[in-house]
Length: 395
Image (cartoon, rainbow, N blue to C red; front, side, top):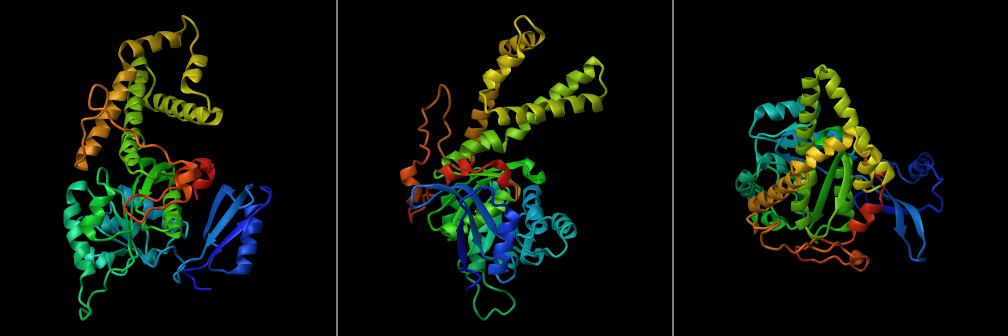
């Protein structure tokens, strides 16, 4: 059984079967696959039944998902991705390389994760890598494209450098840049694009992602495992949803932090210490979010349950509505979306009172099995992602 090709699916007829017992079974089958378990609680099988299913993929010879993962850019998002990859054993530190124009950033990564290779150039970083993660500023992509093309075209007699892996996949963590930009700029056809957010740094992020049709199902599972290591993932067929998600989940934490800041400042003005005001606000936002997720109720219903007629909350809501709180939030989200489109050189005159925008349809069940070999993302994962419990995504 070749390590890079082995794949096993086990259909479990009962959800009572514990993961520990499954791990024991896997270890008896092959030590190579014991670490890599992708779990989907609802998988359609030929009989039409729906059963829990564990899909297990073997590791590379080095024990990781990839022979080598190269990070171009060593900022906070790269560090948020590297940390769970190395700590959870998904990828050995010795099989991770990182390059950044800032030697300080490279040193921070290397010191924080001993064994990670600090590269001296982009060519050195991507040499031999079968997954390249681009996490840089959008204005710098052209320079990186040129270096990746140079790495692809190294002559065989250049003994000082190793060519880039011929089947390398590129994963973009860059706002605004569409998939075709990476395909045309680098010549790599296996491209995935994602938009995480800053809570990924503590394993509580949410990432929306898409990819080209050249990325096969096993590769998509590998990418998903990487993204799931720092939070929830949602796959979308149409990458237009990624630009939309940038304005909600990508930049959303900044909106929440601004609300948090305003509430804390108000508490201080009233007389609370900043520590006490911060504790009150943090736990109010956290508890409210968890409560909304647990109940599944519409936010309007939850808000009404707190708002008594002529009460204190009603007075506060009146001021918020009178100040056009909803309108300001919506306008901010639309402004963020427009800027994301502008950064990708796309039509950005969209939103209320502007050019009408055609919202892409979410993939249907019929499109689940169809994957185009063009540069449209393969369909099928969006529905499955929504069926996965968020607890199972934080691996």
